Amino acid sequence: MALNWKLVIDSRNAATLADFWVAALEYELEDPSALIEQLLAAGRLGEDAVVEHNGRKTFRGYAAIRHPDDPFDQTSGVGHGRRLLFQDVPEDKSGKNRLHLDVHREHGDLDALVARLEGLGATRVREIDKGPAGHWWIMQDPEGNEFCAA
Image 1 (tube, rainbow, N blue to C red):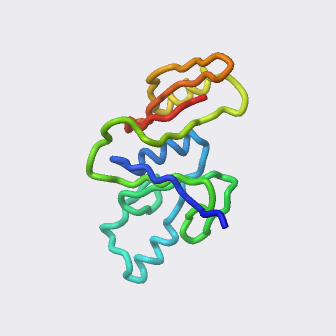
Image 2 (cartoon, one colour):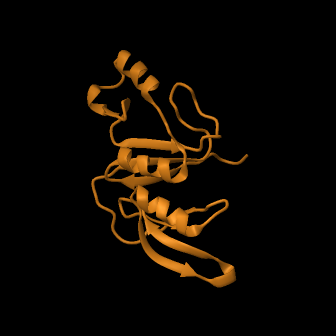
Image 3 (cartoon, one colour):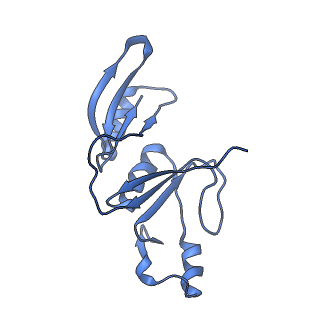
């Protein structure tokens, strides 16, 4: 049986980085507010573990996004498919990523994709043109995590 998975990305500000990737990938932000309300009411979670972001309660230091077509749990908001979880860590990013996302456009112009991502806060690092083998940009998200736009 195949395993389910999520990609976990260390961050300095999970909620802000999740906002960038929601817009970049056109995913949905997971909404754990119903679960948080249940946990708070039952005394199983302290107010110090919760923050408000975009008008919703969320877990301090964590934010997740999921593909809009994938199933998810209605109470927890947790996706059961393609998802990214951002978690705050105390240290800054150092060095090159050992794992990265490739963002692909279905149809259209690479320049338009790159410009859209820049408008969301991404930065161009280097253009790669391998002719018939491919053409893409190495970019960085707002916290400096590398990804490719192709």
